[in-house]
Length: 77
Image (cartoon, rainbow, N blue to C red; front, top):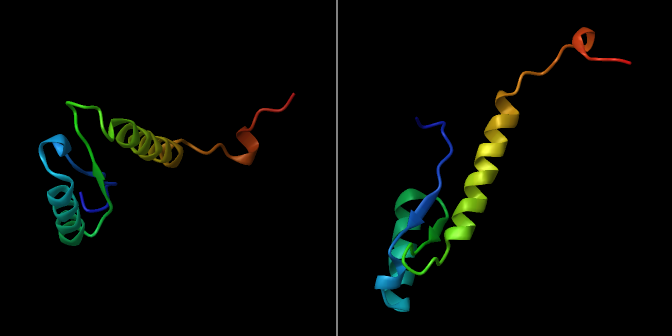
């Protein structure tokens, strides 16, 4: 599990004041050692960023897991 990619998000951002949100984000980043995305499902804040980052992780994993053809197996016209 330690070698799996992780995205860290702080949800319910709309429920906190900007000051508390900044403090919570900084504390979470310090605790996990990763960048933290701020998200609110209610307002949609940060959802696009999370989805874009998730797509990048999925694409990278798919490229890594895709079988690489041998030179002899490559198609030629």
